[in-house]
Length: 528
Image (cartoon, rainbow, N blue to C red; front, side, top):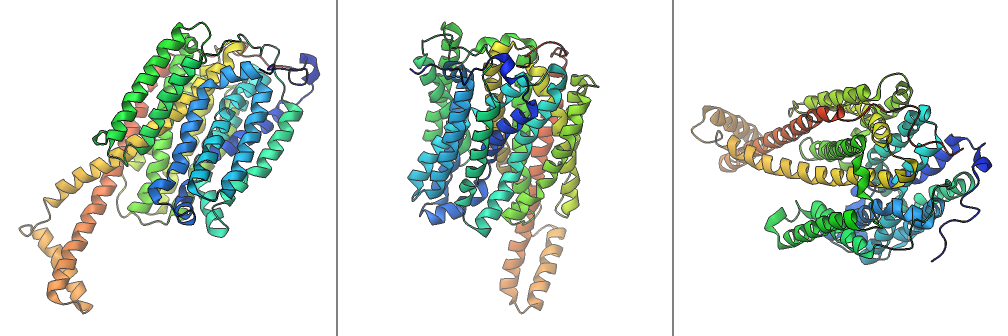
């Protein structure tokens, strides 16, 4: 095995004393932004990919699933991989592999080839988020860590919102292949900047030659099965499907076995003992819920705009931009306030403001306009700044610098798993509640109801005035009335889902008080 560090990788502390930490931040975040963008940029292009590669829509969704599964598997191992091979070497390898895989995704002649390169892309990108977060926590002094985390969170929050818009524009204006080709110049610039400005801290050292292959195998089985289950569950009608049931058994066996193995083995691939820190354990749970709510709502709003209000896919994606704008405006302000106001107060403020935005969403009706969506999204985006930045800072504050890589890997893994669970749960809630509301509302649409008779008569009269014969007009009138019932049931189901997200968020407030107040002078120190 090649030694994990070299003189060019692990520079003496004084050798990088004059490097501006913001240059390091730009270097690592350019790559991370590219990776996070790719989790959503493909979504709106799936019909074009399916048509171009002679595949069905269901088959094309594996271009998304394969990426997410590979990403989720590599994420928790990032801390161990960084210690084993060296953080800078791992970061450079990840960026180079991600960029190369993007190029070959664009060239893919068929769907199997695209899926293979998406797996490589997802695996290469899995380590970029925790690596960038760990590096930023180290190179910035404690008093400026809030600003660094604001910069990191900006990419994590804004990139998924830009993805559908950028993907739709590139696909419509050029080709779906360009959603992958745009990564190439970004990857090249990131590689150059990382090579120039990023170096391994002195404490990054291989702690053991032993490789926990059993733990790795259980991790791959458990996380991989869980990710596929969450991505395909609603499509397969959950546990009515033998495929989903098998995945659930494999996921349970793999995850439980992995936890037991990692707690007992002397050289774990993922050190779960980091959860002994109270603030970290509470913070990771909060981040899981935040991922659930954030990404669950990210799916709900465009879905509502398309299915209920008739927005085209690209316009639905563009309608989500106010949330990104809110985050963009709030992040720098929160980074500044982190040095002035106690972080837990900012976190509670974010929870309350975000809950208010979900309350606004839970009271929508069929006659809403764009501005009824715009303002709750702006409010929600602003709240995300007050959530991500303090939560990230408080959670990682008690972690010793030697454990920060492992801690950020688990932190990001749980956010991504929360996101997958949130997307699966919210789409299921909407589907099930729409069926329930439709059944209730149709009880009032019948021939004995005076209101139903009046509505049918009005619709029938309108159709007959356009030359439709009476028998056909009657049938079409009832069909139009039932269509209205279905749309009303749909908006009610979305209201239910948003209300559930609001309640879930409010229930998290007590956990904030479990976390300790961060210490400005301790925690991971800057490598200068």
